[in-house]
Image (cartoon, rainbow over all chains, first blue to last red; front, side, top):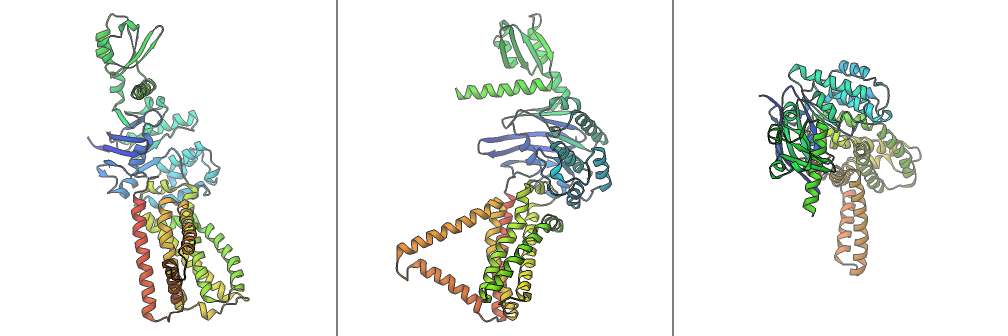
Length: 295
Length: 226
């Protein structure tokens, strides 16, 4: 299989935070969602891919090329939207594009103008005067105007209204139809990913919890509910992040089939999982581990 | 590199015009008060050597766009090279402009022939290279705060030198000998006969210092996280 992005044992050490040996791959022509609670390391991963921060260890390959050794080539084939959109504020939208255009051989000015019209971005307005959502649209228009084969989006939907968010997701789905373009998409809005992502990578406190196909995740993981009498040694091994309440427990399982087999006929309910549940339960599991470590 | 130069030009063109307007007022006052070409050359170099890097390198800091530039398809070492080239171009412009001002101002006390000489030009470039070579790596690494750290550091060093000189006492304590040697060196620089060998040596030292500064800046910038 041909990969748009290969990350191997990527490590970044900051005071108070370490991204620990993260490895995952994104096959060409697919969308991957990067999810996790705040401070999980999602933005760090995207910055490492773009070489905005330097890795402490590990490697990043884009289209099979090392992102540090072939920096210019891989970046000319990569589009990005960062969480904070740092454009030159006093330029007008058209001016900002003219500053960026010479850096990309495949820059398509007509496409940029068309996207601006589509996104209702006024070309003559100063970037400083744009709202956060409009700046995000500008960053998107730039990212989509030079034929990028890998698009990195860090929280692109934050600040966007629901209508445009939906349009953006449809556009992303459309982009990958050529089988050439791939998208890595970090977000807190997991419902967006359920709509478009083929792969999900979950980070928590700098650790990679999993990276797998969306269907595989939805197939394997589930929410289990039942009476607390079901929580014994055998079932506890199957559950993660167990929450006990006055009427029973709710837990996350990474092995739906085994849970179904073990709990058959014992009054437990096994529900389909949503990515939102996964972020919630795995995030809470992290907090519980942290609290346990402190004690 | 040309892309970075173009970017710097677009970013700084307005700012450079503002700086040149300030220079006009400042140097108009200065040339009407100072009649020593040596004082004029040294103060001009300090002014330009500080103002131009501050102007050029401050823009990225102001707009917080360093991360954005590093995301574009360009090597970090090229970004640094572009910044050096842009700052040198701005320095050349500033220097040419102030020398011209000194020459054409009707109420200037400085004789045109005394400042528009090969020695003035080479000494000016040499002094600016020294200032520039120290300032740029700090700015490349720490942004505008780097210049402030450096200037405050020099101030503190000056205060420390004064205190030490006072504590050590005597006209020939090592610190006073050192300060006299520096002052003597600067005087020699400004009065030395402009032989081709002297000018060439000035040029060679200026180029070597700038190259070393560029080397350090590149090493710092490629390791910088944004």
